Image (cartoon, rainbow, N blue to C red; front, side, top):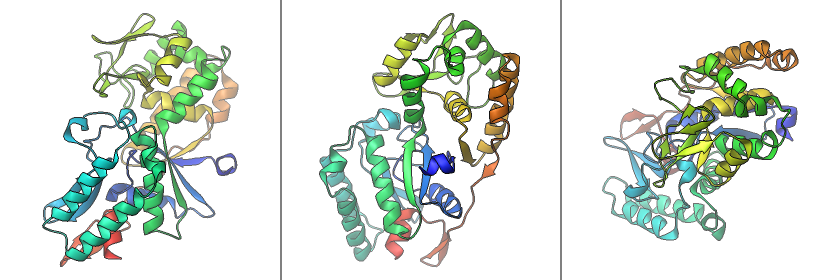
Length: 340
């Protein structure tokens, strides 16, 4: 209902447990918008577990910077968040053991953090989730509510999952849909290459990035794919670029949409994004190229529809600081919780 009235989302965050100072700040910025009940975040889940945002961890500031208490083993760390299995009770117990053994936390901080973890993972809802991505959505909402009880509620939704659902349920089934023609015809592929080759968030002719979709290998890591005729492939994987095959691979989590595809779908459905870092430049560039592509295809009505969609809503910076042991730090969500 909120999206129908106000189609505004944040695309800044990495999908995981909302804790890193960077994303606490982005949502504090987002929460300054008036009359929002929900902070809807289409977060990026194509990142790996060992990304600098530490999506599978609770992080606190220590003597040498942020330190993490992870809910996963090191063997999972190179896997993409959207492909990682749900964290199990034994993983939570290992994290609790690390908290108990930590030498920097004060006894009362250990007790508070211990109780918080128990509360976050308090019911079978979490452990019955089909994936870590699902767990992270629930955990992020719970943690945010715990620390900022009067703020709008955070809704974490992986942008790749939303985009994949739209592709599978709508775009692959409607042959006259503009994005069907763009993603599943030779003319469309050629136009994508003409307007987006070498663009940040897309792909290059030297096989950096990935053409339309990323692959997921047997170790749950993302793999680059390039186009050869009507296929996207690399040495290990190959997918025919027809609607049925792509829909099946998306459902089976063998593929996921790249950033370019995600944003083209958002533009088509007139969603406005809050950006950060270099996102506002990237989003603007993609929109300008998409408008040129639409004009070449004679799709003036679609171009007119998306022309005024803002792409420069910047929501990044430092709103939160904290004194900790006579020094100024950028606190994580856990630092804020432990400080009261």
